[in-house]
Length: 308
Image (tube, rainbow, N blue to C red; front, side):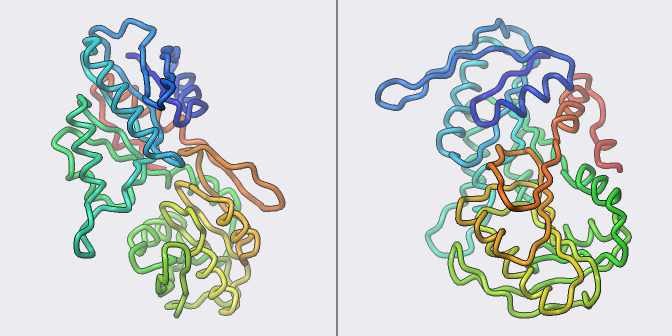
């Protein structure tokens, strides 16, 4: 078994390698003067069970192309099996054709990974679970919920209500509410643009309750901030947000600081921004990914990683 990292999130890859008890293989990744990517695997991977860790976030075009080139290099170096480990799967939001003349980019990315030579995929908290069906190779889909729920249980929050910030997140909110033995509510929203969201109504009682907004990702924090404002008006005692992938832009960070959210709980699935004057808890998913890698290598079940 060998683990190698792209430049998308090397810190996480190093933590995964330590947790898995192996040394991170070395790769030379540079750019030609015109911007083309050059990859050279420095270690011998012939016959190896190779895991390539790359989080396709923040600069998704660069990191996706880098991942494809690394897979091709590994295939031509005669690796026995190549597993693409994507803590964050880029372009997952474009998972269906909901308007005329738009692409299904999540499927395109799946096609590219298979065409490059990936034998299987290991990912975490896909934006839509049906993306697993876009692949004709095995996909292991992990969840950040066990790590996040453990932390929230330690906070001993009484009278807790889990809130979905939109109708599409009800399934995730329901799962969290059962794990935390909490109530459930949902916010109705209307998206005006890619960055502007209006929260219209709230279904559920949150008056005097500790509330937890749950979502798989956030970038501009528009949905979370709008939902938090509605919860505050409804008399929520405290407002927390638990997000698997924090892709926050500078404007998103400022919006969070100005919102009614008291704490953001997220993971290190993508590189984190530097935070100032805001309460953020970053939980590591390195141990979970490392355990999954070891289990895949040893042909063991990964379903035990879903338990808390």
